[in-house]
Structures are given as C-alpha cells and as structure tokens.
Image (cartoon, rainbow, N blue to C red; front, side):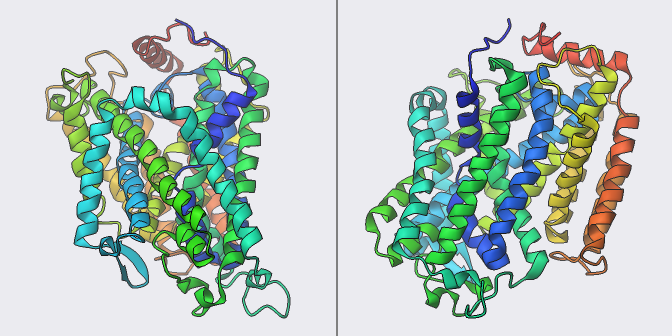
Length: 542
C-alpha cells in the first residue's frame, strides 16, 4: 500500500521545527555560554549550517524509502547486516540514553523548587540520592504513560507542538525587553568581558558538547515525511532549509538574549563559572532573578511537558528497536514477546535498567548530551555514504527528490559530521568507540552462540563482514586523531587549523573505502526488497 501524498510545505516544515525544538533549549544557552562566552552565538550558526548539509542527503534517501527506521535500514541496503546492526545498536543506545537525558531535564528544573534533588559538585549540578530516586520514579511514570502513550500523544500532539515553539520565542522577547546588558557581549574596548574567552576551541567544543548539535538533530522528522509530501522535489529541501534557518534564528536569538540578560554578579568569576540562584534550571532561574514570575511558571510547566512528551516517545521507540533486533536474531528472543496490551513490556523494562545505568558514566546533563550528540552524528554519518552507494547500486530506482551535485554534497555532509564528532574530544570519543566495540561483541555472540544465526524473516541473511571492514579504520583512526587533538582530553599535538586538513584527508579516505566495500548490486536489491516487503512497502518508489 502506497503512502498518501497529502502533506504540504508548511506541515513538513512544522514537523522539522517540532523535532528540533525539544528539551535541549532549556539548557543549551547556559552550557554554550560557559564554553564559548558570547562567541557561543557563532557555535549555533556553525552547528545549524553543518546540519543543513546532512539533512539534504537524508532528504534524497527518505524520499526514495519512506519507511520507519530508515536510518537503520539504509546501511543494510548498501552494506549488509553487520553494518546495519552496528548502526541500529548505536541508534538504540542513543534512544535509551535520551530517556535519561529527558528525565534529567525535568528533575534538574524541579531542583529549583526542591533543593534536596540537586547539589553542586565542582561547579556542576548533579543529583542527590533523592534526585536519583526522583529520576527512577519519573521513568516508571513514563512506562505507565507508554501503555496508552500513542493515543494520548496523538490527541495532545498539536498542543505540544505549538507550545514547544511559542515558549522559547516568548523567552527571547521577555529577556530582551526586561534586561539588555550589551556590555556582556565583550564587543568594544569599554566592555569588561571577552567575546571569545576560550578562543576557537571553545566555539567548536560548544557545537559538540553544549547541546548545539543535539538541538538540531530533530531535522529527521521532516525527512521521514518525504513519502507523504505532495511535492517532495521542491518541498523537502525547502522545508529542511527553512526550518533549520528558523531554528538557527531562534537559538542564536535565545543565546543572545540569555547572555545580555545575565546580571554582572553571575559573571564575577568569568564565563566558565557562570553562576546564579536557580541555575540548575537556568532559564527559569534567570527569569526569577529578573522578576518575571509568570515566565518562571511557564518554564516549569514546559520543563515537564516537553521532556515528558519526548520521553514517552523514546520509551516506545527504543522498545520497538529491541523487539526488532530480537525478531532478527540479534538479541535474545525473550525481549520479542508482546504483552496482552500489545506493548513489548520486557523490552521496555530492559531499557529502564539501561537508562538508569546511563547515569553512572555521565555525571550531569551536559555529559549525557555530549555523548548523545556524537553518537547521533555517528549514526547519521552513514547517510551520505548510503546516498553515494545507492546511486552506484540502484541507479534505476526512482528518486522523488534528486540531490544536485550529490557527490559534493555527500562528501561535505560526511566531512562536517566527522568535524562535529572530532570537536567533542577524546573524553567523549573513547566512549563512542567502546559503544561500537560492545555492539560488535553483541553481534558476534547473537549470531554465533545463539540459535538465531540467520534472520528468520530472510532480511540480510549474510553477515557481510567484508562490507564492514571500513568501519575498523574509521573508528581506530578517529580515536587516534582525537587522542592527539587539541580538544577536551586530547594531547594537544595536532594544531588548530591543521586539524581541519587532517580530518578532511581522513574523511576522504573513509568515504572512498566505504563506497568500495559496499554490497554488489544483486545483494543490495535483495536486501532492499526484503526489508520493504517486511515493512509493507513493496511498491516503494520502484
């Protein structure tokens, strides 16, 4: 059955904006300012325009294959089961850790009202034992809501989407009209502050570590509607470009409003140590210090609505990923069981345990978002590779949106993905490497030590180790470059400026290898037909 093409430009643009304006905006301004000072405005510009290149490559892919879980399916089309599993594994990890992140957003804001939930450790807001208990109880509530979440969210979706867009715009306007200390910008000889106190490294680090990239990753919601677009060739790229530009304007405006609204006392110890009463929920705390009590109330409500709405979705989506992996023989069949209510509760409780464990290696909201940003971009980086491979493997397939100069756009998208991961620094990238290795171990155990060696539904029945060889130098070289970089945790042996060239050469090498090791056309066609049939899209863009 074909999808009905009924969504216009405005609907697709709103879907993209709704995905990009999530809970990240509640904290991004504070952490970006701490890392880059007023120059954090540039961080938002860099992050937004980098994501734009990536979004356009996904526009072609999702228009060709308008199926759920496309990010995990595309590498199976082009490189087979192992690469597909690794990307699915990373996607599952990001979804599960995102549950922790969304819960953190709510509890940190509630810390302003209930001080026993949050404490200061090395100038970071971290949870007390009561805070962790509140996180656990909140996750249980998310599981409860998930039992009837689909209907609940469907009815509330329009309200939530409008709310999520109006509140941040209201914050910008109120902050600008209530307190506007332009001297905080560090522009001009009379300003007591620096514009870029941590230099170029601070600007780039903020892109990867302060929630900038994380905030823009919701663009994929527009790309996923490509199959239902009335005019995908025109509307998909236009919607992506317009929505990302609007998000850039919103986030840079919010960053500017936040910086100029800060009282002088908050900057007494410099940008790195911004501190004010209520900074565990920074926007609400700043609004309270400015005396805008009604806005404080609105922000507390938003701190519950936005994370809860997103959290319910992540609980449901991550459970479906585990269920699908179980059905494919890549995780124990135990987790594939569906309860009488139609919910994969065993998978949900597995995700609950992993979500709580995610608090152990990540102390605070910023640490979780830093990892999430790199993991998300790593999973998205395969998009440009799949675009090139599919042009080679399936040139005859109809492309509702045909990306012009596709080789140039695809390489630039892959390059900026690697830059954004590189800027996160060694402290994050080694965790990403461990995650990939763990995924490979799980794959081997599931496919060789269990009875489910082959996919029972005949989707990518070969393990396709050869087509995954490029992943080894990709991860190893990335770790080496990161270790010797000048970013967080690095040895400062690769100078600023030269690292752009190093990452460019590295990206080109991996880009060529990944296309060289893609599946033969016959195998690609077989995998594509199998997955499309499994998802009920046998006539998809044929």
